[in-house]
Image 1 (tube, one colour):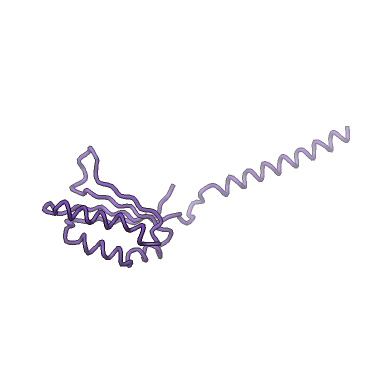
Image 2 (cartoon, one colour; image 1 turned 135 degrees about the vertical axis):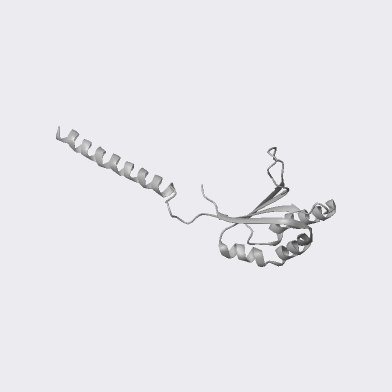
Length: 138
């Protein structure tokens, strides 16, 4: 009987320890409120001037697509053109989404000669540009 009681105590302690470890693991995986966000996103929406020739729009697209190969601080890059069926784009046709690990990486991107080249090429053809930066959250 004593042996059974002792074994029961050992099992309770072991199981309690396992449960505690599992709770700690779950807590470490959870997003803590107020914790630093993981990535910084930079979104650009572009509305080209109506008179801009297609070849100039394509030249801007080409330069933009080269950015991830030319700017080391650019962690991820994607782009596309409007395909919405809601007709709410207000003439904005191009969207570019860039991801950075930090504000310093974004600053390096903004100052980089490849980004400056893109701006110089695009500026005469842009009717309106919207840029939004945000910390991505899940």
